[in-house]
Length: 180
Image (cartoon, rainbow, N blue to C red; front, top):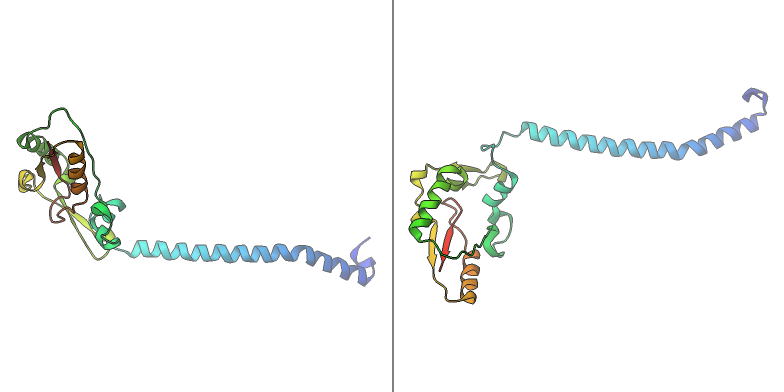
């Protein structure tokens, strides 16, 4: 039977039933469009901000590098080592300072990060590294330390003290300490 052939009451009931069934879908669809619209507008704003922002000075700078250069501005200096990465290596024979300096010279020549100084900017992402010439890095005076410790407990104390000492941020931020 066609819509027109039925009584107007049945047609109104069918229409109300159709509206009742479709209305939640329309509300859900409206919410979905609203959420997608907000997400798209936020994405457009982010893309615009990225495109309009000048390029970083140092394209090799990673997010971790930017954080490490600016670490003291990003959190309290109450944490141990101020974000330093500490490695400890036990060897049978401790090299002399002269041997260590000679070995580290190859590292400084071969890897520019070992002769780079972090330069801060107002924005962490605008921070960069200033790479120095190998001849300008005084490894012996600024990067190699010598310590003595008598026994494992004393070695642990020296390591703990070194790990909790801030590095000089005006120099390339690494240090090689010999404990014998």
